[in-house]
Amino acid sequence: GAPRGRLVIGTVPTALPIAARFAARLAQRHPGLAPQLRSMSSQDIDSGLESLAIDLALGFTDRVAGRTTVATWPQTVEHYFLVGPAEPGSVAGASTGVPATVTWTQAAAMRLALLTPEMHHRVLIDRVFAELGLRVQPVLETDAVLGLALAVQAGGLAAVMPGALVASGVRQAGLRVRRLVEPELLAPVGCMTTTTARPTRARQAALALACDAAWLAEVRTMSGTLETASGA
Image 1 (tube, helix red, strand yellow):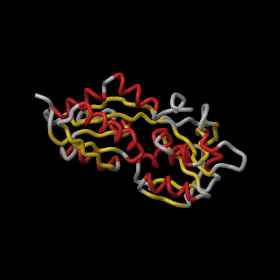
Image 2 (tube, one colour):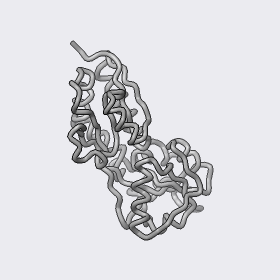
Image 3 (tube, helix red, strand yellow):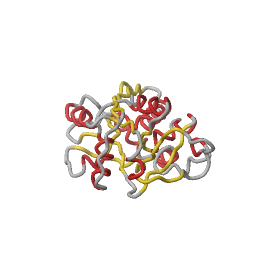
Image 4 (tube, helix red, strand yellow):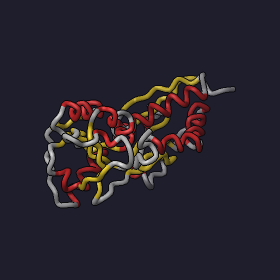
């Protein structure tokens, strides 16, 4: 019969827009399924997969490379953007064409709002700054991506965000979006499951969607470089 019941999906906060779309598509495809979406840190996702508290996760696959207890299904490769107040006379949000660029060194000199240090998104950012020999002290820290976006919208602050967050509405908020370069930070994001438990019909249905070509094409329009989504 058709898959039924609850399916718990854990997601890192920065991938929440992708995970929410995934859960909605899954519910459309399988009306008997009831996805439950939980925003979690990467460490909590590790624990949740191990304890079987979550059935499926969306997160940074570089963290679990080489682990025999975790299987991964690539979804997208995230790129990173600096989001801040629109400058007078500029085109807010870079709503058409490919966003302009800004270097990480330039970003380090700005008043930044960042996620808290335990979040893997922040670990990636700190690693880039450290490799450039830069020491960055954020003006504001939060463990919630909504708080990050609201802080930037309040004015005077800038934040580093992945393509999925930018595509989810930042461009429509009157903010300036620039792609971060020198270096270009790339972060593979994928679905993850444990290999230590027998797969359920619900999880098999979710993984079938994760591998679906139409779904993967949809993900590309709402994450990564945003070139496909620009002007949409």
